[in-house]
Length: 223
Image 1: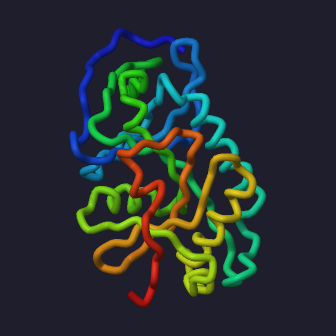
Image 2: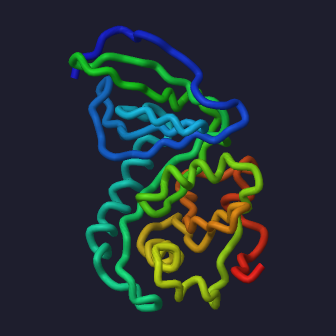
Image 3: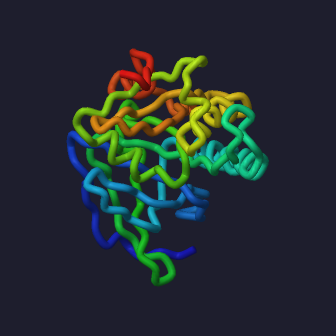
C-alpha cells in the first residue's frame, strides 16, 4: 500500500486525560503489519481509520486475535451463574496524556497514525470490557469521581441478570485462556453505574495506572 508524504502532525487529546485506541483489524503500513481501529479522545471525539505504529503493535494484534477467538467460542453460550448469554468483549489500549498523530493518505484514503514509539511506555495500559461499552469505559476513566474497585468472588453482582452480571463472570472466564489477562474489576461512577472490566498486563502497567490495574478496595453494591 502506497502512501503520500505526511500531511499533518499533531498532539491530540488532553495532557491530563485518557485517550483509548480500540483495534479492529490489521493493515500493512510502511512494510509493517499494524493494528488499525478507532482512537477515542477524552472529549468523546472518535477518529476512525487509526493505525497504531510502533511499540506494542504486535502485542496488540496478538491480544486482539485472542479476544476474537474467545468471542467466537463463548458468545451465545450461557453464563452458569446468572443464566444469561455471554456478550462479545473488546480489548482497548489507554494512553495517558496527548497522543502523537500523523495524518497520511493511503491510496486516496485519509488515515491517522499513532506514533507509538514517541509515547512513554508508562503512559500506556491495556484493558478489556464489553464491546458495546468501550466508549462508556473511556468516558468513565475521564470523569471525576469514578473509582476503580474489585469484585469479590462471593459478590451478588455475579447473579445480576443483565450484562453487568454477565461481564463480571466473563472477564474471569477469559483470563483463564489468555496469559496476562485478569478480570473482576469495575469502574464505579458517582451515579452508581458500574462498568466491569479486565486488565491486560501484556502491556506493562505503571504507577500512572495503578488505581485502574490494581484497585485498592472491594466493590460493595449496598454501599
